[in-house]
Length: 206
Image 1 (cartoon, helix red, strand yellow):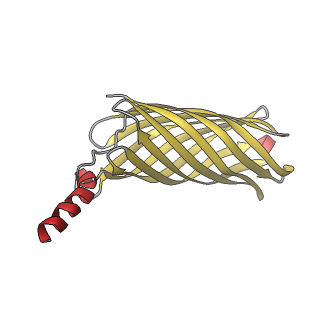
Image 2 (image 1 turned 30 degrees about the vertical axis):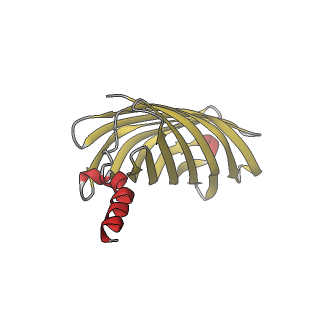
Image 3 (image 1 turned 180 degrees about the vertical axis):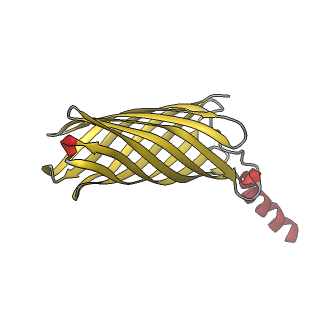
């Protein structure tokens, strides 16, 4: 009985004990399938969709570069485009074979909407956890400041939250599902992007 219990426990824990560290070099394309925009600038909730592309490059054992571009189309409001580019650091927590990394990212942020644009910075913290050899969870939280944007009535900044699930189809290709919320404030006016769903493909780059 003891031998049987040990064999069963080994079978359950083995995938978690052999997880590889997360890969920080990849190309990704996302379809932003649906979201809801709520702002005092235009009354009511407004559906939006769009697309995004992202590139990440590992720069040694702990440093990485990441850049992401998004293009959104919002009902009754027009479009919005963002570009986020910066450097991050990551560290494995506990035994590296557990596949759990914590990371921090400092970025330059640009937002264009309704003919106006603003530049600022962002700070993001998150985790990348290979809970199984083929399956990663990536929760994150960040603060972004886009600076002064006239069409949004001034200084625009706030929080963004997200979680992404990445499933590796093979050593090269992964599919992912993401959920994100962004809560901005522009001189006292709330601008919320909520219930945002993303579907994407990722190509790992060695």
